[in-house]
Length: 286
Image 1 (cartoon, helix red, strand yellow):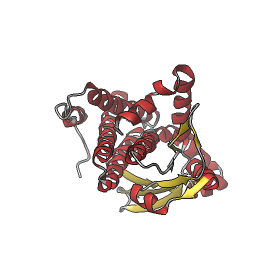
Image 2 (cartoon, one colour):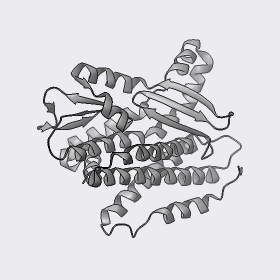
Image 3 (cartoon, helix red, strand yellow):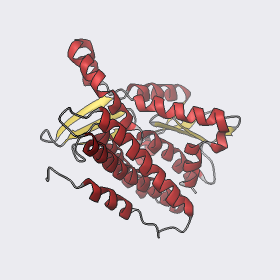
């Protein structure tokens, strides 16, 4: 595998992959560029934070922006697959969308860690995180995301675990046994960090499923933010044996806190209907 990449080429390639002709609606362009921008910013900022002393600032930043943007494009495509599911009710599209989303968020994470694009891949199944490190003889690693675990435990206390739909969606799904309280209204679905709770409804249930899956994918698109904390966490690992043990078992999902903070900021400023996460989820589920 080549050791050097022309990152200008990768930026151009990412933009060319975006098929402007697929849909005439302006919003496809809007959301495509938004996902690319999020990945690019997270990748670029993280790359600078994790820059090695001997590396040049400009090249490191360009690498992070390019890789992150490419990952953001894949995240966007995963959401378009969910939209196709919403329109066709073809449940066979869900796992491919999840794999594409995992690839995109892995690339963003690698960019933010200042790693090569292909260096590490992950797949999250609920609070379970599986990593494959391609630079270490394809070493497989399993860890638990603690915030997602707490969200799952809470869901178990509030609803019935739906085994069948969890296997179909690759995400822990719960069936509501009582009304789901939204923001001033009764909802038919809601998403936690890596969980979904749904009410069974006679019509339009697949659109609600797609909507909540988009929220799960939105959460994962912020995974690269965890790489911002690499250096202080590495220092803590070197100095504290208990944290070394913790790190072997857990992958701290700081990104969930950041994503929820942004959501709440928008909610309190502009109201529920104006929250960008909700607008995007509605767009890709109709």
